[in-house]
Length: 109
Length: 113
Image (cartoon, rainbow over all chains, first blue to last red; front, side):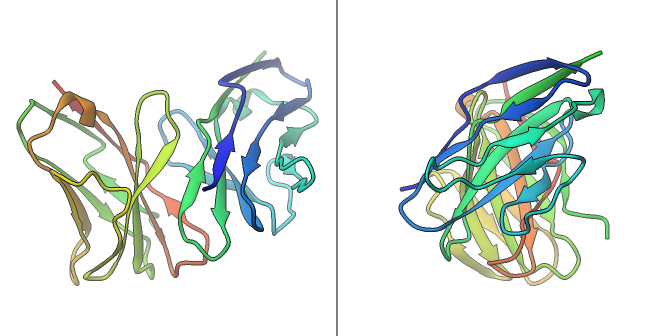
């Protein structure tokens, strides 16, 4: 069975500071990893998927198979980045997403 | 494209009543998924439907919960005889096929009093 762990429930940084939201996973095969963001009770929006290796809103995430991690990073946080961030895994050919419990990021002015 | 539309956004029900949550997938999407988010928890898969078919309902509670996605109209998640433990956010998502990106709606918050 697969599992996604986001060890930080809350993360608070100041504007302009670097931010890293941690995500670790357990899955024996080749996973597909995603980051979703939810701004104040709005829809979950796909932020990143590891296979596309793109940068959205300045965020990047690299899949580290050795450490089974997919941490989300941004060098300079902005106040509008304040939101709930969810890491999710899709296993092999399965359609189900397994989510972590989320990290609430607050960027202070 | 209006995105995945869910209604109602907020629903309050007394214990024992029925709750019906509706989901209209994105245009061109025939695959619908329902996820539930309990307080302090991540989203958990409930059910996966294609038009008129339930493909996987392994995450659905065995009793009181049902889902459908008729040929015409939205997908419906139905909870009969609600209890306080059903209070949660219910998210619908859709995709054009099972391997493509999944897009979520804004969720329906059910409160059972």
